[in-house]
Image 1 (spheres, one colour):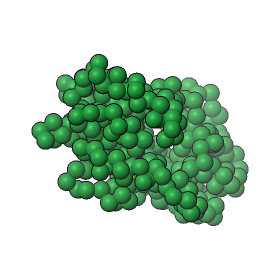
Image 2 (cartoon, one colour):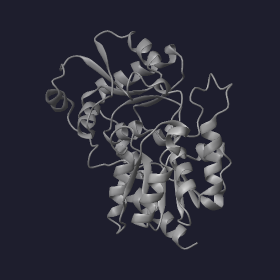
Image 3 (cartoon, one colour):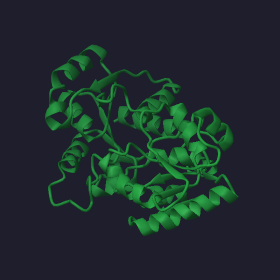
Length: 316
């Protein structure tokens, strides 16, 4: 049974894509979508989740994010629990304002102690709560290479009705998501003429693929990330990328030409956007897709690794 937030009206795409990939290995799944926000909102689901567990009788409960893990810990009975921690359940929301206790991190630490096995999308997240190696694995979320793939920029722009002569930068999320630091992206992009910063909000997965291929570069200015899906999807499309050094971005980039790590001040972002624009105009595409395959971040490889965790938990 997958336990994860349903507040967006659907299961997170990266959770659903992982489930669909593991299904191909012969596992059956049922979802429990948590409705409610924060600690108190999640606690309101205790009764209904207990009822769901009694009726479905899962062999394993797999919770995504710390609060879902906490809810599952309170309701699982003797069922084995695996929790995947994605980053914002442990990272400080805003690293420049960390005077208050990080309750998400504290609660996630409790969940890690109480669950049967924990999956962390990066080793840094695991280290932050001093995860026990004997009951932990680092498994980033996968990239669906059938959805995200390189295509001709002109073709993508035509389908999206975008100007063939304008320069476009695709921002990693909604402008309203504080942790993504839109003000930094906006300030840097205002330095360039004939350039439009596009907000990534309200698009289907297929439309995101078109946008990535239509834009000159993908831009990440986040304060924090877990293992950034947007970055991996942009790599799968062979797009030039500028990213702050967050999550596992440095590891994923490796030595890929056309992908630039930047500092968190406008001057640094401007310099790296210029490099990425120059790369886009002269070379067009990176070899990011090959890097994703080299790192084993494709759906099939990640599904097998998750499946191995399931087998490990069932054998305890």
